[in-house]
Image (cartoon, rainbow, N blue to C red; front, side, top):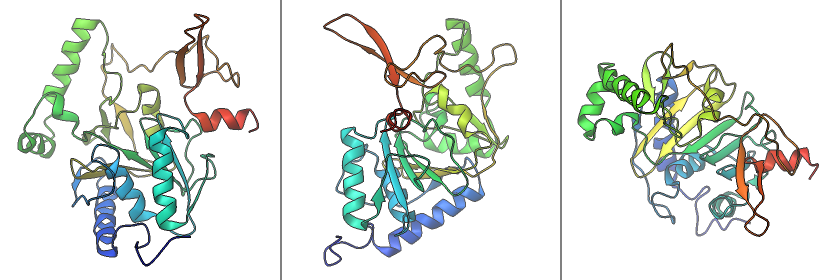
Length: 279
């Protein structure tokens, strides 16, 4: 049971949670816009998902069911410790089933099973600014967003296309939200980017170190930046299956057995894989 003598519900004080919720509401009202917020101190080092954790702590309630994943895994050190921290300060139950969870906090992956109405996916974001690869100054990137001046980004993609024959960005592939803001979808793989478009659930993005929150509300248009003659492509897993559950057409982790020299694939989403196996 939570010890209310030492911790407020969800650790943060009520004024902090209200301020973060106000920022979340503004982010929802302006999809893709980065809303500054006063990032609080947590018993976790910055860079370990403090932005996402603060968002989760600010919206979670007694009736919620929480799922936490790290690169698709429910059992990584990061995921386990975040679950323990949230549970110890809220007594909210946790689950590995993405379909049952009301709040899903994640790092680097979106669950295989699409979100439904009423679900919230909170993504931990290290660098929220999509224009950082072309412009280091924060004041300049703010002006570029305000003026909708994204030609340097298009030029960067075009030069990448000329050098490599294709756009070589793997994670953090830039997207346009509601035909207005260019947004960083966090370090999710390209495979997960199409899940953002017209999704039924709410996506919230928290960057603790950079002190930014942004959002993609339900049923919002999200389009990856691409050219008509070089369309957006995701990772190709054709002909490959998960060795544990036999799943096809999902995002797979490529693994290697050093003893046997065997190369094999497993579902990145461990909760999805376990559910297919009836566990």
